[in-house]
Amino acid sequence: MAEAIVAGGGDVAMGEAGENPYAEGDRVLIPQQNLVYEAKIEKVAYDAKSGFKYFVHYMGWNKKYDEWLSYASLKKFDESVKLAKPSFKKGGKKVEDEDYENMAKIPLPNVLKNTLVSEWDAVVRDNKLIPLPKKKHTVAQILDQYCDLVERREPWPEIVDGLKGYFDKTLQAMLLYPQEVKQAQDLLRDGKSASDVYGVEHLVRLFVKLPEILPYTNLDEEGLTQLIARLQAVLNFIKENADVFYSPLK
Image (cartoon, rainbow, N blue to C red; front, top):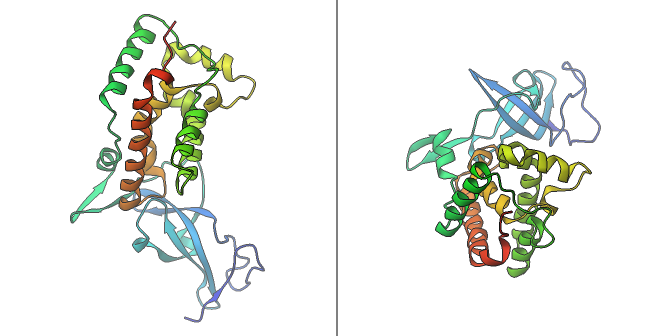
């Protein structure tokens, strides 16, 4: 097939299929049987016989699954659609869904695990609250401090920014106990970033929840393993500075 590559953002090719509806970099949905996958368009091609075709990368999947698909195989991206989780081969065995989440678990050091349990007991049973906003040792400051410690070598700035973003987006949805909801609403009502208000107590909760989030990222098995090792390094840093970072509950 004679293919003319159409660069995203440039002039679109015209033909039997009409104007090109997608461009390079677009996120799309790909329904297959009873599942729907998220993909990113890497290349766009056109010929007069078959119309537009798209070379797609399935988000979170190994690049070996990248493939060319017709326009009819793609749907516009919709945030409300439930997506299939990534799966891949490990030792010749298919890994997916709950198995992927198990692989993405980040072991907590015992001192942090014990503190998390005591904290839950104090907040949920004794109606105590963590003193907020943090005047120092906020989530953002703790992560920046670690990034400075490793001299901001790649890929640490990207990882730190990603953790801040996840924290800001998930705090109210995933990281609060019911007793803490009103406190959060009061603290964040002026549009402040949660990572500039909260501290280590809720940051550790994010690490507990990350296995539920990571399956939706663009990570293959190797990338996931490397990321977990780096996240464990951050947890060890928190453990070593726990006496400084944690505040007594009131």
